[in-house]
Image (cartoon, rainbow, N blue to C red; front, side, top):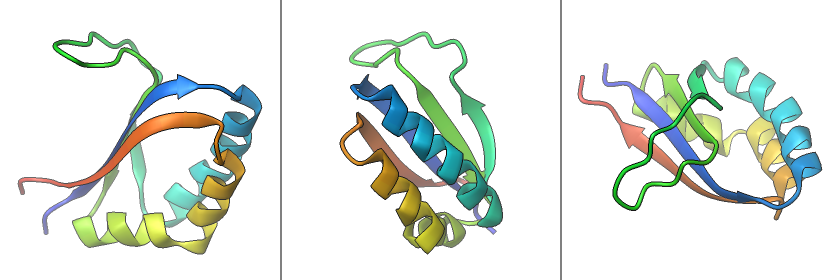
Length: 97
């Protein structure tokens, strides 16, 4: 089965309290949906038009599982807490194998 990944790059963080509230809810929601955090807040070297801000990479056993996790009620609650506290580029990506 082809894995699925969440890739999230934060362009700006305007409200750290909203981000903290999101993190408190999102972590358990992702874990309950079968997600595994592979990278978060580590060192970044950005190239070309890359952004050297907070970057998060989460792996799921399948692309479908990654899509379903984003649509889950628990994760939607986390997104509501985040609201306009950040500007980010969020993608769900299908792995190669």
